Amino acid sequence: MPKPYLGNPLRCEAVLNKYGFSFRKKYGQNFLIDESVLEDTVDAAEIGPEDVVLEIGPGIGTLTQYLACAAAKVIAVEIDDALLPILDDTLSDWDNVKVLHADIMKTDIQKLADEENGGRPMKVVANLPYYITTPILMKLFESRAPIDSVTVMVQKEVAERIETGPGTKAYGALSLAIQYYAEPSIAVQVPASSFIPRPNVDSAVIVMKRWVDPPVKVNNETLLFQVIRASFQQRRKKLANGITNAGDLSFTKEQVEHALAAVGLDLNVRGEKLTLAQFGVLSDELNQFLG
Image (cartoon, rainbow, N blue to C red; front, top):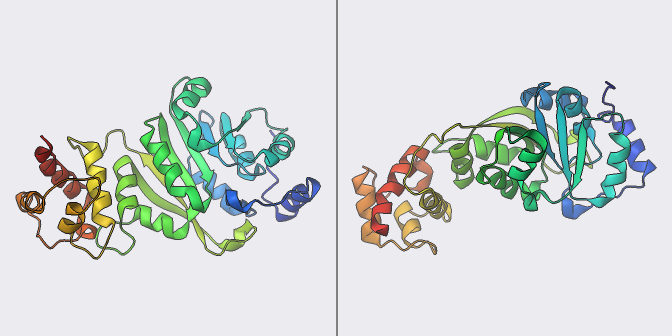
């Protein structure tokens, strides 16, 4: 099998110049030009010869080449039609790569797993556009599609928000949502100089290993996430006020205070102090008021 070559900045630029490619701001395109980061990303994702990988946003195929050398098959989903002829060129030496011209937000991931991997779990690897990181991550996990792990390059601050725990400034609804579905850990720190064009912020590779079962069992999963979102909409407000004033919830102040007291929480507590387990117990207590 050929060796990947697009991690070399000069070769990357040569491909871009060959096709006269112009970066499109609306897609948040930043291509990796750091061979060590590319190798570390594949290692962090623990890609092996039996794995089928779903790559989101392959760009010109830089990371795709590295994935193709390690995996059984790579399914690369690219939204930008201007990149399709480039991918056809840069991936021509790898017969285990399939490029799909599609929007991942409109893609049926379960159907993809059924068609490309017999319904068995896939591993997701991606260099995600910063502007749509959270929607993509939530789609991947909320789809309930068979996914073993999600390894993505994201803005450093976002990676820290995903990994962090209660009581920190970065802790919030995203932290709790991801930690409900997966166990996150930051694997690689990536400087802005590793990309072309160079972004204004540093990045990080974060690995999210899917739980077989959520670490917290609740009676009403929808309510759990509603309570979490309400608790962080105005961070400085008391959790009780956030839940009472939430537009998609209809609990009275008395009901919320009763629930807090019932689970042993201070009436003045803020959402950033609660663990996922505590949010689970609180949502179950509130659930009884829904009839």
